[in-house]
Image 1 (cartoon, one colour):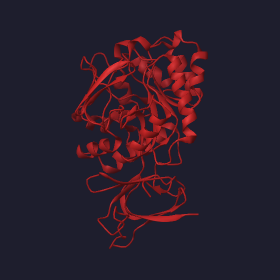
Image 2: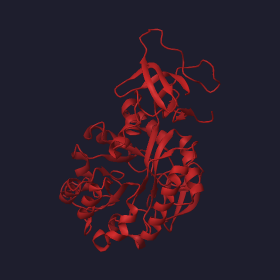
Image 3: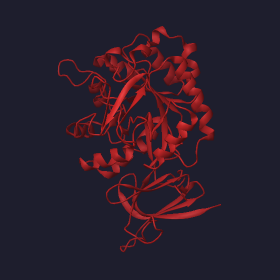
Image 4: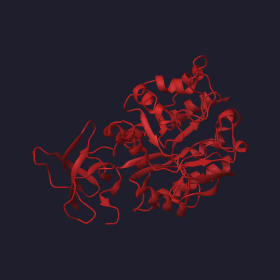
Length: 384
């Protein structure tokens, strides 16, 4: 049995306090908060010596990410390993490889590939929690950067075509106004799959019907959905005004203007906001071009777009989202929760996401600027 201690400013559920975390093998065996005014010794530093006291937070979680570091979620198992390793270096210890809209046969192949890969996934990468399907049941009017040739309606799709996707499926986006959508939402929710409403042109009543049918989340709030129009409120209004609905937010300063972030924070309970990256394979590699579901995407700086200018995902990782939210006035504790505990709670995963006894020892060490300085997955520091 291996044991170690991590000391620092601990980002707990309600506050940041100095203390130490005791770890046995892959698990947190105890948390001792500091009652010495002088404070504890500094936590582990890159050179192994004593340095400025870092922040220690739960490992970050990205439940909506299409790729990273030149590796696509819908690529080979080697791509999945490369993606997982790239994400871990940004503080992401758990994630959902996310598919875009594609023919159902291709999505079934993606699901099979991820299922085979999960038990063999790299130990020095972020841990897979299953997979996410962003499509194909999206509204053509709000398809965003999804290929319209591969969109489908639940009412026209036999359950025999969908059922092979269910094993390992943790999250799926569905537009609630589509024919057969509410029935599919009920069926999937009954099987334990989390459904997120999105890529939708619905009016508010059908949005509420989607949540009432069992949907629990909202895909990238404000993007590719009916919005806040005073005489024609849509999905965004339903998502903001329901305390039971989780909402995803892409906090890259491109998808949603930061002027709207305080509205989201004030409208949503603190445990219902989820930060996501929606990152593409080119994230972390600089400018370039790639294919996404058969559509050409160009990355320039911080923007990913189709040739017509439609936004097509991001190039950030979740650590950037946390920094951006804090820079715009969000409390650090809440920003970290939105990037760790909240997405896990939405998925029903309880063994990680908090600095508490009995939790998996997935940790991220941050400096004073909230830059990632060290990452621990399952009790082992990256690179150790």
